[in-house]
Image (cartoon, rainbow, N blue to C red):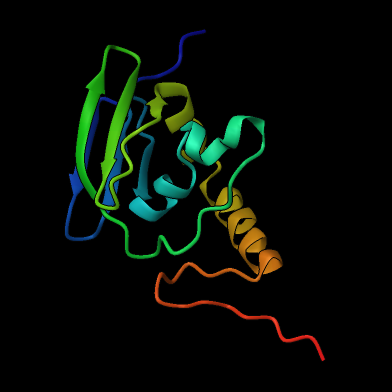
Length: 126
């Protein structure tokens, strides 16, 4: 079975979302922050040891580029532009968005980290 390819891809810069529409009627609206913290790049995936991305709440997508016939290259305004989002990975992100987002929020909480780039969380041990 082949992986579905979006029939329409639209970047909404004002709302910082990437919309993916599929021929079968499925539609996913993926926020830039969600895409950034789930980038398939080595910087994020950490060569098997994922690196928790913090302070990405205000990140935006500046460009979406085709990478051959199999993926998208997303360019973020924080300079991140590595990692190719394959059609299969984009579909997985869309289908599992709620679970993946909650997992990310749980990881941030466990690490005492923040989505806000202007916030540093300090643990005080008494």
